[in-house]
Image (cartoon, rainbow, N blue to C red):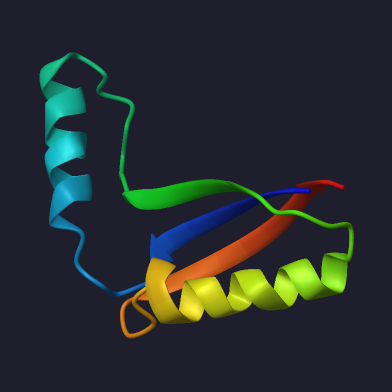
Length: 81
């Protein structure tokens, strides 16, 4: 089974890396960009076919390792099973 986890900063949390990317894009002439928020994407393969078990295990992974719950949100999407 394949899953994708997307981790993003919570609204209101400053994103200096996103601001730096925004500035670099403007420097490259991509002026239409109004805002950039940086995040992380994890593509994970999981053995088995039980989606509920996979969701539970991925939630544990996010809460214990992949996301800093103080400043980040995460979403889990099962891509195929």
